Length: 235
Ligand code: HEC
Ligand code: HEC
Ligand code: HEC
Ligand code: HEC
Image 1 (cartoon, protein in one colour):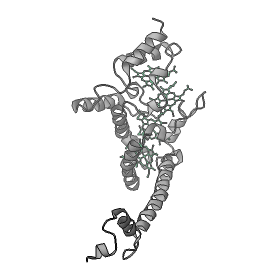
Image 2 (image 1 turned 90 degrees about the vertical axis):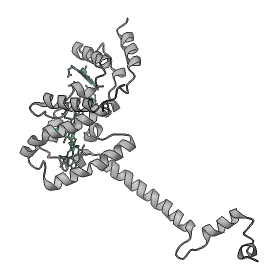
Image 3 (image 1 turned 120 degrees about the horizontal axis):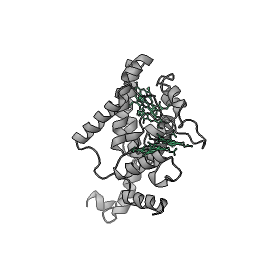
Image 4 (image 1 turned 30 degrees about the vertical axis):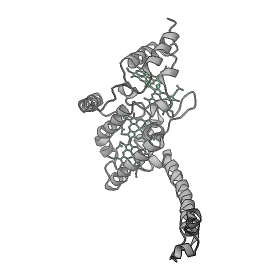
């Protein structure tokens, strides 16, 4: 008789698996390893989220970016202080909300640590020299994402064009019709702009167009917005 049938295991695969699961291996049972892994996973995941949240605070961002430049500029803008008391902090505009985009952004941001160590923007002067290039990186991202981070708070659909000043209302309707995105018209809403920024912005857009990188159909629901606009203007 074989060992298997002697132990009565042959006909009962579930029991066999159960026994195997709890039988101590050379070091630990598979069950123990799985449970320990599960608990460890919870601890790791919690710590992971905590790290993600901590690295989203303004204190964290300006612990590296020279306070005198970015922070001072931003503090004079409407996103820092306004009549509604809603504030957009660094990460609101620069770090995606959706976890898969967020994780990607955090991984790419590791390169900032390298640049911090080598001192790429360590003095205000170096910062100014580098500003145009850094701004271009941000514009590129926003153009590709259809200004996704702005749209976490703003939405053409919720804008009341009747109470916006005439220029804003007409430009926004032009934006909807022309498939334009927020950053196409609102560069420099939170920081100073480098000289020649319009030229640099145009280059970013041209480069993306040349690579067919821009979304053909913008993610926003143009038809729905148009009908809303028509409704508002009472036609
Ligand atoms: C470890 C220091 C450090 C921290 C912390 C840090 N940065 Fe940076 N960041 C840098 C350096 C250095 C650069 C210049 C990198 C380069 O030239 O590529 C940079 C570049 C940038 C740029 C320019 C575009 C780009 O991606 O290169 C943006 C936007 C930015 N950081 C936003 C943030 C935000 C928002 C936070 C907080 C969530 C943050 N940074 C935290 C050091 C840091
Ligand atoms: C966290 C939410 C939030 C995010 C993200 C955000 N904004 Fe705002 N934005 C606001 C608030 C709040 C105001 C001020 C509204 C008021 O007048 O009280 C504002 C005001 C503005 C104004 C009016 C400026 C003025 O001088 O009157 C513009 C333009 C604007 N935002 C564009 C943008 C763009 C472009 C982005 C993306 C790069 C963006 N916002 C991201 C919340 C946000
Ligand atoms: C075609 C150019 C254009 C595009 C694209 C555009 N805007 Fe504007 N926007 C303007 C102009 C011009 C004004 C009025 C002057 C100003 O505040 O800069 C304005 C004003 C605003 C204001 C202030 C409105 C008020 O009544 O105080 C907000 C908020 C705003 N834009 C947000 C956005 C957001 C968010 C997007 C993307 C979803 C966007 N804009 C896309 C041109 C544009
Ligand atoms: C309302 C949205 C918004 C907020 C809030 C914001 N930024 Fe920006 N940031 C931008 C945009 C848009 C650009 C692209 C350049 C431009 O148009 O000014 C940019 C560019 C940058 C750059 C590239 C260099 C430059 O000056 O253009 C850095 C670095 C940066 N931001 C860091 C920060 C930090 C740090 C904070 C918080 C203290 C912050 N940002 C808050 C929207 C924002």
